[in-house]
Length: 259
Image (tube, rainbow, N blue to C red; front, side, top):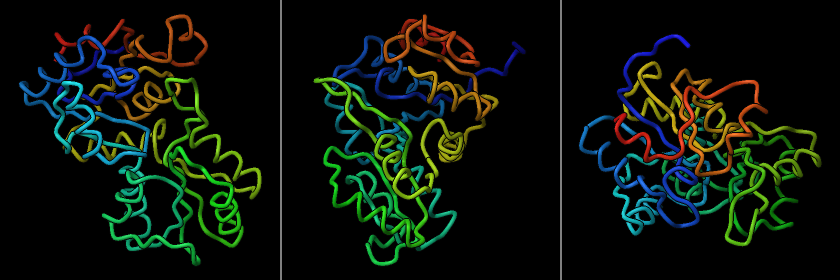
């Protein structure tokens, strides 16, 4: 590969990289501590739109990871930034949790089920048939279909759960309308995140545990990419994809000395 410029800013996925099922991954605390001491711009990213950045900050703090709220970037925040750029002061029918509704309220959106500009689908643990039926009818009546992220399943201690991408497929099947996904692997999420911290892709790196979202998003945004093997992707899985990360490491602990 062509030689890249030195890394001056870092983006890292959260689940599978820094934490796993509510427990910090060894080395995550050292990595975050060194990042903060270095003064380099950084973001912790997640495609999960359930929680606000403040909620996530509190969750990480309880695990011993001190991440300022302004260094957390979620698919809900990326979705809100996209909608604010596309149609400022618009209206939306939302299926999701506080992370998404708060982000939309913060940009001045009105949440309504009366002739909304958008139907916005995010992550929730309580998808209801009634809400999905309402979404289908509003999209058929002309509302534009937006989703926070394309993940089809999410992790839980009991096993995989249906996630936004799976519910989006149901709505697409019923309406014939495909959504626009704002979260990873859409490079939009990475670029808006980089803009938020004043960073540039040619001197930035993305760390993730998934080839299909983290590595692909970083690659398409023009960043150096690191795949860690502490999450969903194994070393054997890598060759299934037509693209590769810049480097594969066992865990975040292997990157502490790179900061």
